Length: 88
Image (cartoon, rainbow, N blue to C red; front, side, top):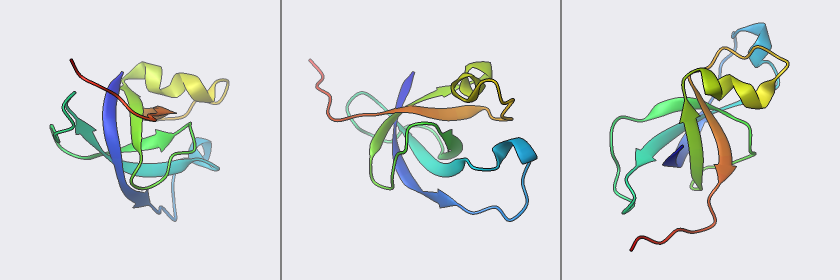
């Protein structure tokens, strides 16, 4: 699991049928101190996150698990919304 901040939404007029009904969000991965790390990416939202929120996300094959039994073609999925975190 990794932390990220939701930067915006993605609108796709044509997409895989298994993505119908899902929300695509642009996220920026974050380090534990809240600094941006890496490049922004698109993730399928399984948690109902909104722009500006901090979220947990997963990458790889596990990203499709929250949508089972539908086979969602995704490499990244938001699986939780972060209320707050502390480092130390």
